[in-house]
Image 1: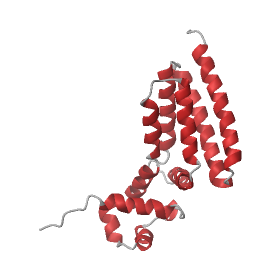
Image 2 (image 1 turned 180 degrees about the vertical axis):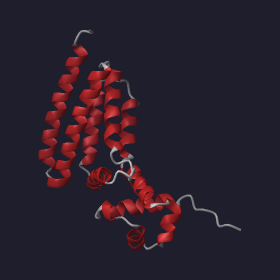
Image 3 (image 1 turned 45 degrees about the vertical axis):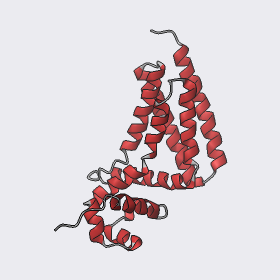
Image 4 (image 1 turned 135 degrees about the horizontal axis):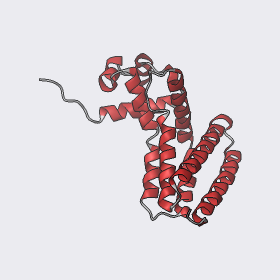
Length: 200
């Protein structure tokens, strides 16, 4: 009789893998290296995750799951510019947490790995597109025209990526936060002007 699969085992392994990667490069991930670090057999990891590319994709999904909370929080309230800016600021506060900062490094690394290895489709580059889509949707809910919403969202997301890289590389929380707040204020002013402009 076949042994039943423990439904909790894969999430437990994934959490342990992500925790391990807080201090290790994603590019160095192999089943053997992770098995040695976690004290399990390589077969266990292959059984639960399949190929290395599938494993990396699972890691990136786990790393970027924080997006869901940010998006859900804003979509759960009545659309307003204040709520939108508050959601972005709350996301930034999350970036300041040490664990999240380690995850940001993994996000950057995953995206760059996909640039140099086109066969790898782990979802790292998709994170940027998803943030842009969410930002554009949030602005359209406020009444911003779709074309303007998309460009403003991309401007903000690209700026946020720069500030996130700042946090990872310099660890200067105060400096990066000051730059973020100034950029967010300018973004809020531009969006307010778009909302106040008469319809074409």
